[in-house]
Length: 299
Image 1 (cartoon, helix red, strand yellow):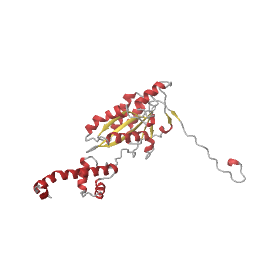
Image 2: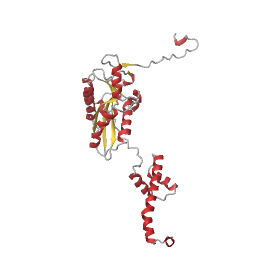
Image 3: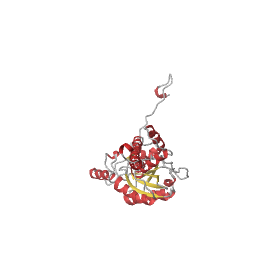
Image 4: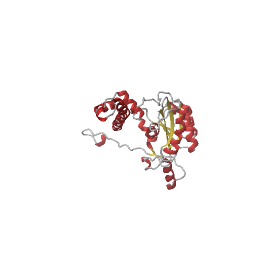
């Protein structure tokens, strides 16, 4: 070929080394990206198998390197970190939240703690939400899972909302919320404690939904390398995006701030009322009568 084209073999090989590998690399990257986007939960080993079946000869290590360069590595399910310590001697309270009928702000607050995994460490977030509007009214971020973290979030919520006596505060049975100091603070503002049953996270579903939204839309979408970096942006996300902009299906696709403003403008109720309570009626079951006895078992 070189003789027919009147090209030296050295020139041909130099040209091939410059062009052919570049084209092959682009074809390989394209195949990897298509496979990774189609199978989002696959790691580099499974992607390597799919690439080999398309005719590429490539090692799993190279696939991993290219996927890392293109930010295509699958997100692993993180190790579960327990944030609720229900093994304590503090008093626990019945679940009152399940019976409340809400019609205003500051009738029911829900609180929870969660872990957030950063590049090199775990940090913890305590949050307090207004259950009626889903608005985050208090939060605190810390490196250690301590009672003071939940207490700081509560203090910030109290300072922001100034609730009146009759507020119901709902949480899990964790030590941070059942502690004596936390309960004294609730008593001081005239709040009534309510707690989910142990092992029943759905009884605090509003907070669980919030935590899922936070991790999905902020933490996973914009990975943070350090505590300081997250601390700078968490307030921006909660106050300027989650509270002010993000639409909630439970609120008729309004943001929490918009929902509160619209309801305040439309309501004719007094300035504030405690939440009403509604209990599901239970039908009395009368055992069948034995032969020869009056109906209902009466004698």
